[in-house]
Length: 420
Ligand SMILES: [Fe+2]
Ligand SMILES: [Fe+2]
Image 1 (tube, helix red, strand yellow):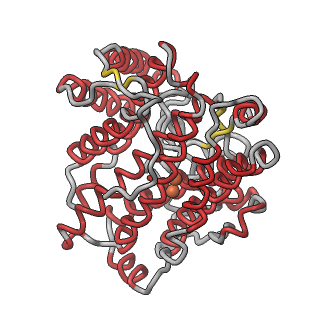
Image 2 (cartoon, protein in one colour):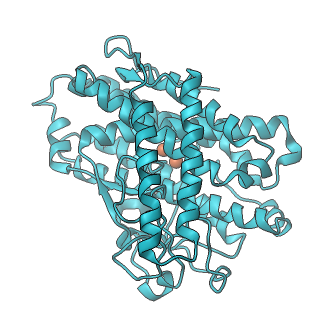
């Protein structure tokens, strides 16, 4: 999972924009909660394999007309695809240039990934379809949206890791192979979620998505921060849902959650790999700029998740969770994990942090409402201006809260381990 972050890259002028255009403008997934009723039952073919051996080439594009039939509702909070400066990546992982690269550690990690603990984990059974058929009404729709968003996020990771695996092959074959094996994992995750969508007679057209979607560019340093956080927050989200449903089986309304326990260990391993990568690039962790960026990325990821989830409380309540409590648990745990490697993190356990998050939720709700009214575009935009300013000022105030000094490149020893 590598895409649940959007605040850091605002889309100017696109707040809540809704469109049905064809490529290359926005994406093809319905992610903002409004589905075109005419197309909601259209079953589309899955164009992506979950097998490791099939990840060497991108899935072929689908004819634009199919995906374009879907409504597009790309918002500030939509999961994104990322690209980076691959030449700089090659320099960073060149063992001749970078003497901090601990190849023995990467070799050990590679063995860990080759073990492929979840090779036989993602096997479906007939429970899936039966459970999907029982899900009706608003919860059904919100489930579909959950599967779509999760699939997009997993697929985003697949694309980025696959390309990194390809580009680093000559410079650092060990690191390159780890990236390829991580893309294997993400392909599996995305494929499994897409199979879940087939229970609802839907599928994301991942081939089309690959070609048509806009990619957000991040310099390598920012890819490391963002991806590390995405993996760790993904881990904490999955394990928290898994544990909750294990303790409260009456809310187990779709079997995909039963797979989260092993699944999240993949995300945890991915995060640990990025931790090792950052240790090998101490210049990204040990100065005042790194501290500012680390806090910025943490805040972006946490706020994005909180705002997203608060727009979808029906889903979390549907599986018996309190959305805000769930999110705060995930944020706090992710932050504690992140503090082991990032040089500074926000003080998320300070009550002021949650208070400000809740204010942002209120402002965001008004922003969404402003976009949904009957007004003409100009009026909508005028209404949004003060709200965007209020959101920005709340974000800034949260960013300026006294942070926690954390992390240490020296003590952040990597130890592959299962975390439960
Ligand atoms: Fe994943
Ligand atoms: Fe992952």
